[in-house]
Length: 331
Image (tube, rainbow, N blue to C red; front, side, top):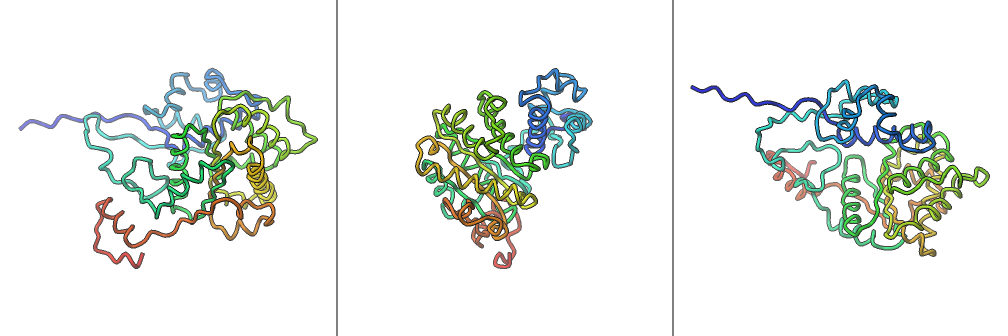
């Protein structure tokens, strides 16, 4: 009897999307703090992390595995702690030909765009797609945690990208707490982040007037150095707004900024290029934090993600190949 050929397994670990975003956010903050907003070169990153340039390229490409200790070095260089959710081990056999679409997914986190396990909810997606096409629109998504807010945002962003829109996503849950300590600091960080991700020049050092304050400076910067340079609309998605409850003063100011941007979009063609998406939970706590005349939670298109219906639970269980001998009405 022939012995089965020993299957070689892929070595090392790879950053998850959450881990990569956490690392990139910390890197951007360090660049803003220590390098006047300019990007670190690979050589500088190599000095900070004590890793080779080739290894760093593997880490950020997320296409091939590296040692877990390597990721620890990267995270420690930016005062981060590597957690289990930040990486995974791609240990499928190299000769395995199993269709990945047939493998079950864990019911946690964002559902991928091509996942067969995403359940559409009463044409909510189509409603959002139509709204994002409107100049100066604001979509506010409200639901409990793990009910699909981020998955819906991902689909709206994907649709906007198909229309050649520029899209940027920010998660308050993944951002470092240091950027929330001061409104002016947060506004500067936001302007630099938007500029860099759109490959626009950073004009912050010469154009930021401390006398005007963060809100006015940010508005002027968006008009002068971002929106006026874009040929297509810009979608800014802000996820996990409930995390601003820990910083009530900044939260109040940021909510009033969103309100201001949305109002500008009603009257000025330049600001109609800006489309906003905000997602949060629970609604009642956030609503109490803002004045009705400054809060963004009375504006735009409200989207509430309801619980799954019995039929949707049954459909999802079928797609997952789960035992259907249960009373879905009790879920």
